[in-house]
Length: 349
Ligand SMILES: [Zn+2]
Ligand SMILES: [Zn+2]
Image (cartoon, rainbow, N blue to C red; front, top):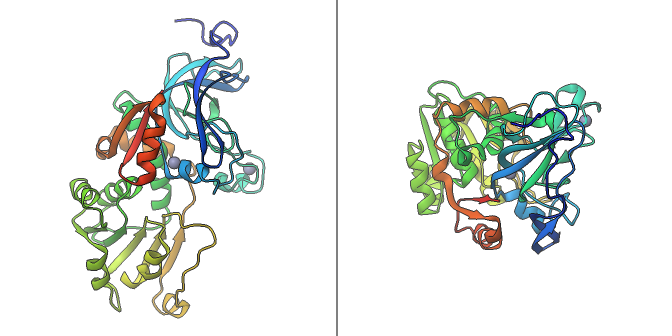
């Protein structure tokens, strides 16, 4: 293997012709040949082997997110190190890695309060900087993690979303024997189902109208799957659940979600509701019932537990993938994702 630390001896050969998906503006995308990423002194360039499409990509495409155009999207990925910056001594060419797309400055008040997900100067790979729906992506080496051999490429592309689940569950406490209700069995809901199943809950009850997703929820650890109508019939005062996790982001669902909580219950808002929507909760009930209400944004130092969890093979993430496509089929995969007749769509650039 070539000397991996010199930085100059292992430059990529073709600097101007990698293939990438480019969001040119809201609702406009194309497949283009663009310049290969430049490897800064503290960076690695990763040859992307597999990348997942996520709801955030859809928000970006619709112009509903903080991203500026043009942008190469893609923030859930695995690949092999192809180039190493001159100051990087922790990785070598050929290492199989994932990257935490959340780049914090390390200097602002929130970074210095161990809250890098709230960094004032936050940048995101595939969100504000070129992402992984491309043959190569550049990352600061400090945001890169090695992938153990036990984790397949398909599973490794779930490390980023699973890190968000691990971070979210850190906000609540699922006690042994708790009854947990989860709204939504999309790809994130199906990760949450498994994580909750392994967290000591007596019952994980999932609410999901889509029959195929409901069946998958059962397969990965839901004890009971209810339709929204059946769940509505369960709502009472007091409710029967110690924990309610909302993973749909639908305001009408959020409006009723607290109706399932026992006194002392914990509510976790995981789903992303459209910015600016409101629900009407009776604050007296929150007060009277000792309820706690939690939010969870992205992730914070949770790549390593997510990697350990996937390495243990306790979670089955490969069955959440409905499509594996070459980059050239991005548009058809993205269209299926937009229509909602897919689960996780993976690209192999
Ligand atoms: Zn994502
Ligand atoms: Zn910061």
